[in-house]
Length: 623
Image 1 (cartoon, rainbow, N blue to C red):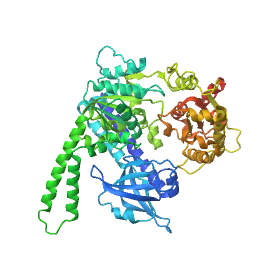
Image 2: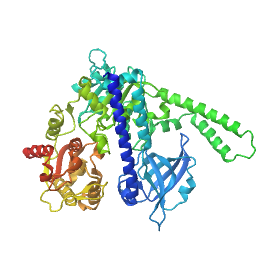
Image 3: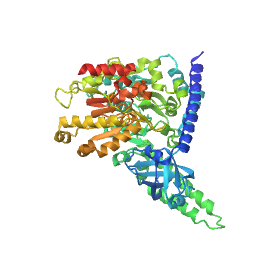
Image 4: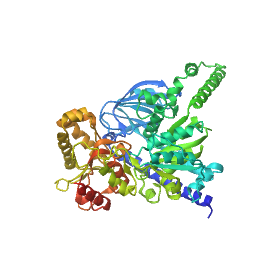
C-alpha cells in the first residue's frame, strides 16, 4: 500500500468518526433541549433567562447586532463566547412551553453580563424587543462540523504541498530540514533554545512539547519572532479563543503587529485593539464606508414605487462600498506580521486566497485533527506546540473515541516522527516535590525544577503535597442529573474547612499583603457550583474572596496558583471513578500548584486505580 492510499484511507476513516460524533452530539443536544428544564440550562451556563435587550446597531462588518443583558444568576459561569451559534426564545408566564424564534444568531462578544449578538437582517428585531421573558441559549454548532468535514475532504483529494504534508504525517518518511549552526538566545534555557533552533531548521514540521510550567509560550513567541526575521507574515492558530488571546497578547507585548480575526474572550481595550473589527473601524476610510452603507439602507427603507433608477443607485453605491472595503482590508493585512485566529476561525472569508509560509498551532494537543487541517491548506510548514499529556480534545461519542477520533495530529506526529519533537525540560512553576510525581509518571523523569522554585513554600517546614482521606465521612457521592454530574457535599464542606485551617496557619495579614492566591478544583461541575455557593456563605473567607477561584480542571488549563485544593468527589464501594480515569486531567490539576497542593478524596475508592495508588504512596512518603 503506498503512502497516499494509507493516508487518505486513515482520513476517510476519521471523516466517518467525525460524522458519528456529529450525529451523537446533535442527538444529545436535541435530547437535552427537550428533557432539560430551562433552569438546568441556566445553571449549566448554556442559557441566559430572562434577559433584557439593549441597543441595536450595524457593526463595522455591516452585520446587524443587538445587545443582550443577563438579569439573574449572574454568579454562574457561562459558556457563551465569540462565534458560538445561539437561539432566542420566550416563555409565557402561565405556559410551560418554550417558544423559539425562527432564526439563529451568533455571539460577537461577551463582557461580564452583556453579550452582543449578530442576527440576520430579517431577524424581526422588533419581535425580540417586544416579548416578555426573553431568553438566549447556545444552539447546536453545525458550522464547525461542516468546516472540519470540508477540510478532511479537501485534504483527501489534495495535490501539491497539502498532499505532501498529509502523506508525511501518516508515514515514517523523514521530514526535511535545513542545516545551519545553532543560534544562541541568552534569555532562553538550553531546551528552549534548542526548540527555537529546531523550529527554524524545519522545512516541514516541528513540535515543541511543553510540560506544565516549562515556558512553552515564551519559547513559541521567540520562535515566531525569529521566523518573522525570515518571513513576512505567519498564521497563528489555537483550538480555543482563550488560547489565541493568550499567545496574541504575548506577541503584542513583544512589539509584534498582530491582527486577531474574531473577538477576544476577555474584552479589555488592550485585547480589542488588535482585533480586525476594531482596526477596521479606526481606519481613516471607514467613516466614508459607513456613510455609503447607511445611504444604501436608507434607499432600501424609503424606496418609492416606480423609481426606475433605484437598482442603478444601489448597485453604484454597493460597488463603491466594496472597493473601499477591499482597500481597507488590503492595508490591514499588509501591515500585520501575525494573523491570529482559532482553527475553525481560519476559514473566515477574510483569509480567502491568503497563503503563509508557516502555521503555528498552540495547544495543539487539545484540537481534533480535522480542525488542524482547516488552516494547514494555507501554509507550507507547520509548528505544533502543546502537551499531549495534558487535556485532550473533547469527544462526546464513546464509540468515536474508542475508534480513535480523540487521537490528535500532534500525537500522531510525535509517534511517527519523534525526531521532530523537542521536549522542554526546565520548569519554573512548582516546588520540586509537586513536580516530581508528574515528571516521573508522564515525562520519564526528564522534567527538572529551576533552582529558584525548587524549594518554594509558604510555611517553613511545610509538606508541599497532602492527601486528606475522606473515606471516614458518612456521606458518599450523589448523582444529580444525567448531564450535570456528581456532587459530594460532605467533602465540599471539608475542603473549605481544610483551607480555612491552612489560612489560619499562614495568618490573615500575610495572606492579604502577599496576595497569596488559591485555586479550588473539582472535576465535576456540580461540585464546583456547590463549592462556589458554599464559599459565598462562609464568613471566614469574606476578606479573601478575590484571591480564591473555584473551577473545573478545564477551567484552570494554562493557569497556576500558590495553593491548589482538589476535591475528587468520587466515593463508592465499587471503586468507580468515571472520567477521573483520564489521567491527563489529573496531570493538569496537580500541576497548577506553585507551593502547596491539598487533595481531598476517598482513598479506598480512588486507590483501586493504579495511578491514584501510586500518587497516594508518593504523597504518603513525603510526610
